[in-house]
Image (cartoon, rainbow, N blue to C red; front, side, top):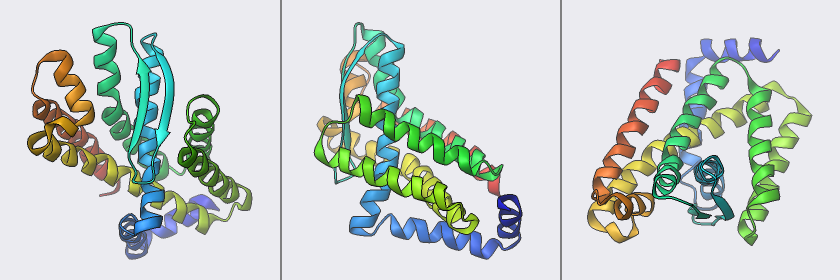
Length: 226
C-alpha cells in the first residue's frame, strides 16, 4: 500500500511539492519550526559524538536547545581526533540528509522511522541530559512511534517528507549561516573556529569547505527527485 501511495504521489507532483513547501513554511513558524529543526541539530551533534567514539574520545554530554542550537561536550586524545570531531557535525548532517531522501525515494518508510527513533533514544540514554533536550526527544520519539503504530500510509509519508525536507534544507542553509558568522563574527563560528584554532587555517576557509560539501550532497539529493 505504501508503494502504491508513493507512486500516486509521484504522479501528483503538485501535491508532493506542496508538502515540501509546507514543511519549509513550518520550519519558519516560531514554536513548531524550532521543534522540527531540532531534528537536524540532533543529527549534527550525534555526528560529533560518533566521531569522538571512533577516535577513542569521550562524550561527556550532548545538549539540545530551544533556539535549535546544540552542543556536544567531548574529550579528545589528539589533535587529529579533535579535527575529526569538529569536521563531522556538518558532514554527517549533509550525508544523512542525502541518505534519508534516498530511503524516502525508494520506499523505505519504516526504516527511516526506526533509524530516527533509535538515534534519538540512543542520545537520550547515553548523552542528552539537559531538560529541553530530554523533553524534545521524548516528544519526537512519541510522534514517530505513533506514526509507526497507526501505520497510515498518507500520514506516514507526509511526516517523512516534512522530516526529510527539514533535514535537507537545514543541513545546507546552516553551512551558509556558518560562513556568514565566520566572516563577520568569527569568534562565534563554532566548528569552523575550533578547526581554525587547531590548524591555524582561517575559520571562513573551513566554513567554505562546509558549504562546498553540503552543496555536493544537496546536488545529488536533488537529482533523486528531479
